[in-house]
Length: 510
Image (cartoon, rainbow, N blue to C red; front, top):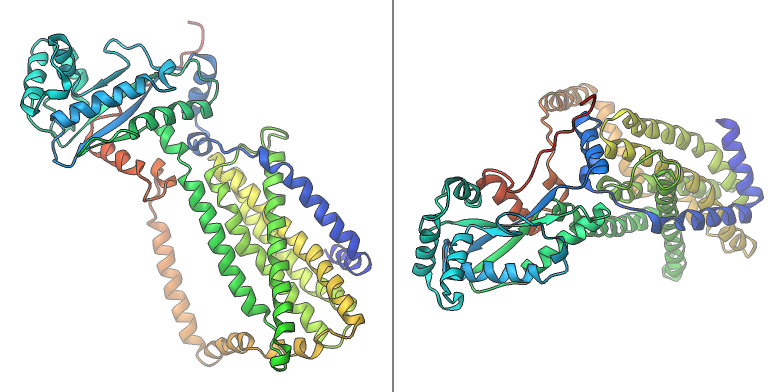
């Protein structure tokens, strides 16, 4: 390890331009692979290593895809969907779906590709030639009851699941909500992404319709997993984390000027260190994503496609990677303030802080790499890529960042503009004094500190032993996503997902 640190120190101090050039070249190389990054469906990423999932994949690959369905939750501001307004909304939605780009994928079912809780009334009005535009609530109810009286018990039972379990009387006069179902024949769909596009097409056709108090909310697991709101949320959190880190770094890296005349110089120095740290983090993120593509199924096949967890990895790298920059910059400033040359300070910072950073990188990476034995692909891949990201951040912060700082300060040193005196007072800053003050409590009241630590540790162990875990598809969708309303209502009020099937794969000498 010492030899590795000395090697880094040597190349930083002797060939800083080469270090910077290699760092930028590697960043450009990894960044070139980023556009190839693909996000896998949630069901693929989080499916455990289980025989049921293996059977699902084999069935999907070897047999024609079975019929899938998209459910549409019908609700009304009046609290009753057995109404003329609801009937007109359902009919209009059906017509939109039949003329949408998803029309070629509609499945041929005995009751038609689209059915709803009002299908009996709609058929009765078609048969009798009753104009849908002019009917009232009473007429809808009469037509519904008339058609149901002519249907077999099996036909009625099939439609009963389209009403809430607590109120599933198709001939009743009221219902708080109900379903319509669009059946899709996915045998001609080439990929899961294409399947998601078909569902989005149906969803768009339904969601575009609005008529008075009636609302139509499409739902399917393909829509749930294809919702880009999660990615938008992650991007927003990443920007927020970057802004917060910039503010913290500005405080940590601020060089107190000697007077008002030195404010501009102090601001430039601080801004340069902040931007250099953020540049290093950005490079580490590019290395990580690019490496993920190379390790993925397109090339080496060591990990799967990107998952929702991996989308959050850049946020993690901001928090973990910035520590390396803080340690290196602080040590470098201390050495410069102690009278060393820029070159000597950079080499000394790398050799002293570098050992601690290597140990921190190794221990952190090992912690993440324990996930390689996790049966859930997304968690295993996250552990591997987190280790790659931490290692990338370490290499960049220990080589590229100090090399750039050396080049910048070497020029200022030659011109005699390096603020050595101001860098020398960094150890006496309020952050250092505040950190030292926290040790007083442990020094004067060790028993209190130990007792408090023991109580908190006991509470943590108790919580760990009583931790309950469960998997929910909705956990990967933001709480304010509109589709969650339909997801929760259908899951709570209806007997089952209408139109779904369970396939049994039979193998052997049959």
